[in-house]
Length: 224
Image 1 (cartoon, helix red, strand yellow):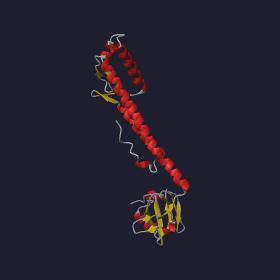
Image 2: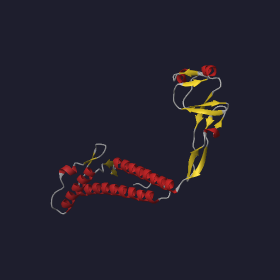
Image 3: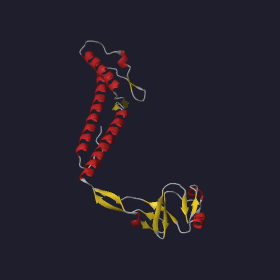
Image 4: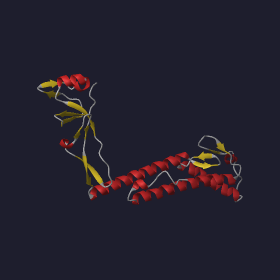
């Protein structure tokens, strides 16, 4: 069995070195190549480096609100029978660190909100059992249709057959729009979905940018 890096070289129950990558080394006056880390098995290590123990490194910094984990010196690490555990002490964050951490957390939350907004926009607006695109081009086209429908209702022109045939949904099927009222209903549904998503995203971002703990803002709830 070869040694997996990183590993800790232990001698006389004390940490000698944390070996993070393969490199040549000298033990008891004998030079060993970097390939030893890949080729030596347990018996080889016992033969060539009998005073060493090679143990896995366990490095799990503790986490606590308002604290920073500060690694203790190697002499204070815990050398066990099967592994060496890095030890830490928790120290108070400085005001600058607290401010920087809060800023980073707020930025991260705003980015998560933006990603959820984008995802929901891509899902499309639900109307009459189908979903319709809400990108800027689609909204402009729907606005043009709504304007045409208003002219139809004013008696200025008949409802065009090209609209009556239907509006193409995201699944590439058509929703027939036999009357101008049907066209207005679709345009209105898309407009409401779009504006509701935009406003809810803004509400969430405002909350994230003012929250003492931005992680309490849940970007997955409250959407239409």
